[in-house]
View 1 (cartoon, rainbow, N blue to C red):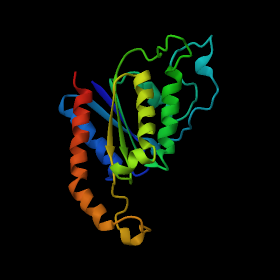
View 2: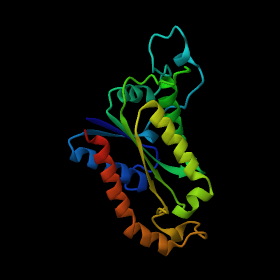
View 3: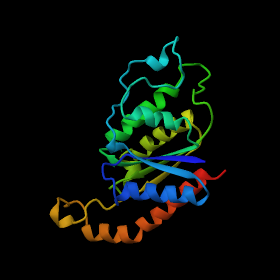
Amino acid sequence: MKVLAFNGSPRKKKWNTVTLLEYALKGAASVGAETELIQLYDLDYSGCISCFACKKLNRKKDGFCVVKDDLASVLERVKNADALIIGTPIYFSTETAATRALLERLFFPYYKYSKDGKPLFPRKIRTGLIYTMNVNEELIKAIGYDQHFSNTKMSLETIFGECEVLLSTDTLQYNDYDKYEHEIFDKDKKIKRHKEVFPLDCQRAFDLGRRIASE
């Protein structure tokens, strides 16, 4: 079992998204999976450029993006993966730019404009989405996050198969709240929640990874 994880956060060490991904990979490794964590912000790439090479009738390959950049080799490794886990913070109501660009390049070559709706990815694999965000659970539905999460989950399930979503809410944003704007946040509550709730999120991520990597 080969599990690929993608960190869509520019914060690559010790922060919320990458920490949860690391726990998810530990969970996958605990049942014998081989794991790899890919730092998207270390790569130089773009989103889909609408060249439509992957939709040409005379194309030589199915499920192949012709754009040559740092993401090309990563997309090739996806073809041999048994599971994918994508982690991203929420920036202005959606995934980070790096994550969105990945999703565009990941989805479109395997999406076929056919009446039967069958994707071009050759088999079913499990996927996971890990979202971290400043907002609390009560605000998710009120500001429409739930619909966005559902849409991305649906796209992953359409192309690859079963998808599990983990939400880590009301997360810690700063090391030191006294150095940055935070009028709308209660820093003491944020710190307390990070100490008490975030470890539970880490355990949930571990469990997600273990389930995704289980035969």
